[in-house]
Image (cartoon, rainbow, N blue to C red; front, side, top):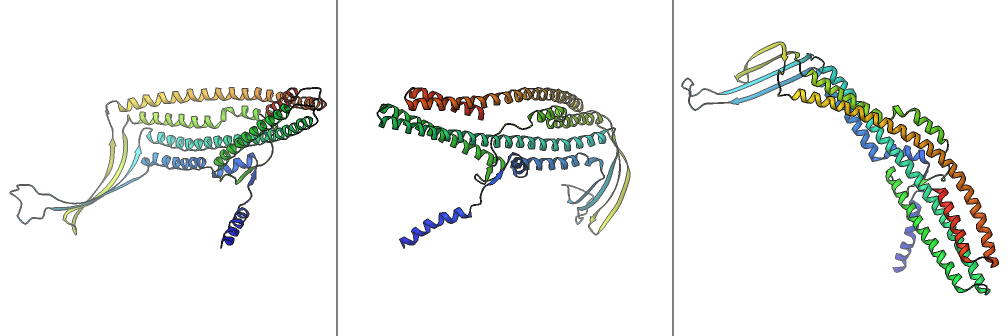
Length: 402
């Protein structure tokens, strides 16, 4: 029995491992496409954009034909009525309906249509903003995973390098060319490098978890393809961004917001004037539900709120201030994006030059390390000098990766 249980415990992990699918390898653009289809924040934005379409439809509904109906059955009696017969039934039945159509509203219908269009555009702009933010977040997350993977590779190479140095020190100690302290110093160097490796591995795991969250996928089901590399076509991408700075998603959202406020202002101005409607209706009323008197009416109706305590004036002033506020915000956003584009251009040019310098530093530092290590093995330099050159190579590699 115990043997059977042991076999089950041994076999089950291997069966589970075989059932686990291999991670899907994605590059940055494939990861963005996956996030835009599965990220819950994007899905939520899509639903809000759809809701804005229905709200826009509701905004203009008052300009369409309106139908209403009423039905009632009542019984009423007073404490004293000399003219009422004792057996008189006080029950009353009523049934009525009306159809109406707004004919003219001094600009209210036009303002409502503009407001509806602005609501639809605002919903679409919000959705696009969310997609832009998610795409940026995913690209950044992919780059962070590649960076963490590169750092881990650098640190693992340093662990191997430190281990090799420790073995060199052990050989020198055995040959009587160095004291035991050099071997202990070598062990310390290996331990510190291993600590760096564990830290880099943990950082890679954290960044992978964040990417999986952005993609709404289980951790471990996604693998990032490719390696950390010099940005391709960066000047062209920056130039494209500068050319479209006045047509950005943020400015589109602010434009829709401004048009909504302008429509609100027009609505408040139109509310100062009367509205003209046509109506037609009819109904039945009587004491018995199977013997009701009927009637009908049709005509034109004018509705005019002559004074509302200053409500329309206050709302119109508020809408005007809101239009001015959104206009100023849009200009501030445009100038900020122009500044960011210019800053990105100079940072990109600086990055390209720095990458060239860092690659040259790595070559020089590596050559210097190889020379110093040979001298250390020959006994002409100290272990401290060797450690210094090792650190220079490590820092140069990290600087180039970052």
